[in-house]
Image (cartoon, rainbow, N blue to C red; front, side, top):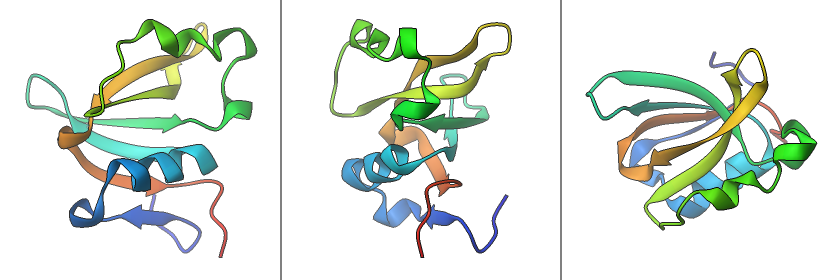
Length: 103
């Protein structure tokens, strides 16, 4: 999905704060490795207007840990809409900010 209107965060410059900054601005494509060793592509955000109103605070059900991101998967459940998921930062292989990019 790379084009001139996206921002790619390179793995060597990926920090928790750089990832959170992208997620708070819009939807990001994240490729990460799951527990079985498979690459998984998700479209996630922390931008409030993409999150269902009745789910905004449901993330508090997840245990907070600095090495794990809790993010809104916009395609999480086709029947109900999105869902909150956890992604270990160390398993992120690629992040591309797709929306909310300013140049």
